[in-house]
Amino acid sequence: MDGAPIFVKILETISISLVAFLYSAVGHGGASGYIAMLSLFGVRYEEIASSTLVVNCCVAGLAFLAYARAGNYRHQVVLPYLILSVPCAFLGALIPIDKKLFTIILCIILPLIGLRFLFWPELKGRSDADVRRPPLPLAAAIGGVLGLLSGLVGIGGGVFLSPIMIMARFATTKETAAASALFILVNSLSGIAGRLFSHKLILDAGLWPFLGAALVGAVLGSQLGARRFSSTFLKRILGIVLILASLKLLQLG
Image 1 (cartoon, rainbow, N blue to C red):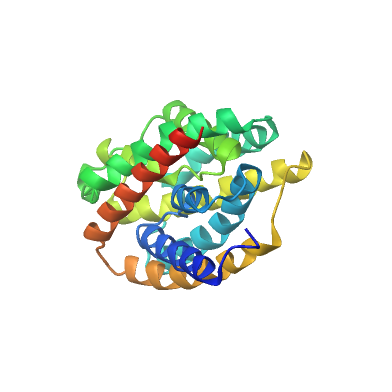
Image 2: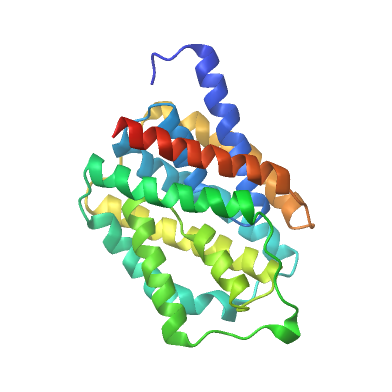
């Protein structure tokens, strides 16, 4: 990656910044988008999960602060999901995973996320009167599955948590965005801790410019997202990119 032409590096940086902008605008860390971009640009799979978890923390943290300041955070909305997600994210980071399995998981996850953004880019939540909180065991189980996924491949899980919360009427739209941002932040931190513990946190020095690009995009996206910013068209474009990335990964695998 260090030997890539300068225009390729510029394209990589712009892509990461755009992904951070889109995801943070809806309260997500953007790990699935970063994974797709880094995979398309040929980054080694060992570095992808670690790098996306670190960037996830920064982007989701900024998104959470923006939504919390806008008065959209409710601790009772997200805490039930964190009961099992945090330990499961830590355990997931400890599980050895080879390139083939990593690729198979991504080829399943990325198309699902891409289809969601392509055909259902905007999920509308219910009003406060229509919201019904999930039973604690159900919320904990959902969090546990998504936490394990987060630790394994570096995806924070918010992109799956948010449609579940909205379609099941577990929260309003803005509550869901704030809850997803915190969910991603905490799970990413837990995944990083697991990788540090197992000596699997691999960060290439050439990837640090991506962090700066992601932060720039996240600051803009999170601020606009907290104030009812809509990016339906761009999210559909992102959906196509995720699907194409999975097809390339399948071809390379």
